[in-house]
Length: 250
Image 1 (cartoon, rainbow, N blue to C red):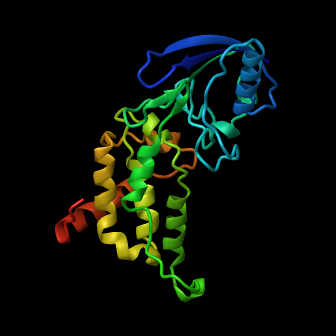
Image 2: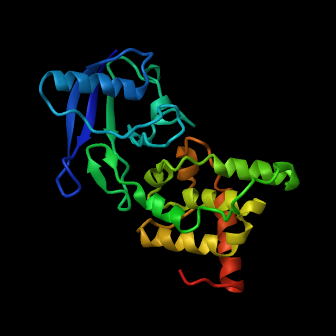
Image 3: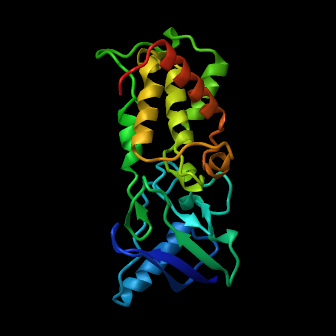
């Protein structure tokens, strides 16, 4: 496959960026990141600077492969991360535009890599549970209905990639935050912090300059793990209820 890549290049967060064009030859069996590896090998061989992009597991688990491909976070394949996207989804002769996540809360580090530590700071405000030290209790000693367990596992699938933010016109992080709040608040292990979790995490989300949700469901469509927007509604209910009953200073 002979492709033309239009890639965003930016030397740093305070530098002016630009789109640069690169020809590349790739196999249809390559993953998208393997294709970028081939490009970088050719650039290094020519003495040019390789394209910086983020990656880690390359198994669709870590959420690091944050690329907007032809205007779509993670590319054209639904429920697929960039690292699991294969070149057979494109055609010989295609021109592919590759850009970083676009959000004020995700400043560009270099080229296609962005700083997503805003998500880490949100997690630090409430994405944890209290646990006593010592021998772990038997899991069967804590009865949980299948409905609740299934919903909690659906929310826990969130890998924190930020595709929801990149897809939202407001750069909202509501889907990410609601998934983290919901999967802990629904389980008995998360109940000790449940009163303040939604308030604290939403407050930190606002402090990080993420936008608000306007219910257009772009986040759900872009999510590689198909996290449903019902968790946003659930978090909103918990936020309002706890704010009335027991407002917390955050």
